[in-house]
Image (cartoon, rainbow, N blue to C red; front, side, top):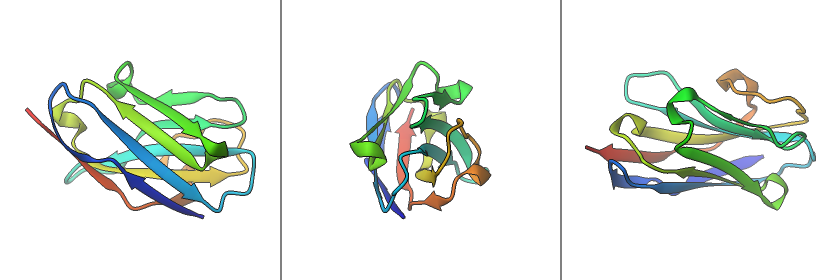
Length: 124
């Protein structure tokens, strides 16, 4: 399984970006895709996830109402729409996936496969 995140960039506070994640090699119909971010000097943290079995989504409190996760192509593509961006949203954003899962998962340790990140920089 391979993942590739894209769509990062430099944006002013209040702006928007849409991150994309291309996933290849998934065979199961039951999967979860998550977005994580890591700011300089900080641990990687969960931002959002979506689970195919139930359609449930998860958002960390800091992004609720501003970010939206979606998926397409039976889990081979995932998006993270980020609106009203804030300087504290700055970091490297990673997408990750896990197969054969039917309950929502939200932690770094829950996910099996990771892609390289894409840098998001929000200026004040």
